[in-house]
Image: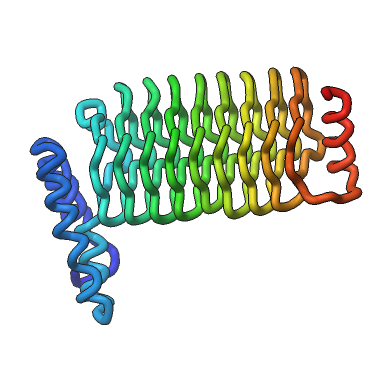
Length: 272
């Protein structure tokens, strides 16, 4: 490629080729992905060739409405960056059992009838900031091996992350209209739930947070369940509001004397 920034015409050619592969089905798509994955190592010492590979390996559906037709992307391998930012899915979006090897961007993406990301593996940075899910969002058993960001995401209905693995998680300012299921999740880095609005039940049963978990200014409109959850650092619930039942029995957290820890202990005693 003669320049770092590809021309508009070249981007359109790439998108047309991407749509053609989708039309051919998952087997053809994954055969292409396997071929692409064999190329980066031999090109490690050639920056220009690496840039060319990255361009060719990118899945680009920015602003795409065509996804009204191509909505079943289950079981696909994405060898390079995948950009679905500001795209619209008018049917349920199926990504279950897919694998994203590069950065995955779903910023401001609209999933009007919900989405299924169960058993998906994200190897790099994943960005869902500003996305909206009109129906249920299924992320059970998902693996985020890089940072995962869901800032200001609107989950109109239920959202399920049960059994998921996170390198780090940022849910700052997100809203849940239905159930928020985070039971049995594990997070190795910081987990941010600051200013999250939990409109339905919020379940964090047996969740494991190795680093700080922040729930500052969060609002729990219904039941908040944290029983048997584990905290490697003392969690923060500064100014959090609990309007329903609060369950903290059996939590494992560092013994500290801060007001937050004392408040959790007080809650546990009141509910014991």
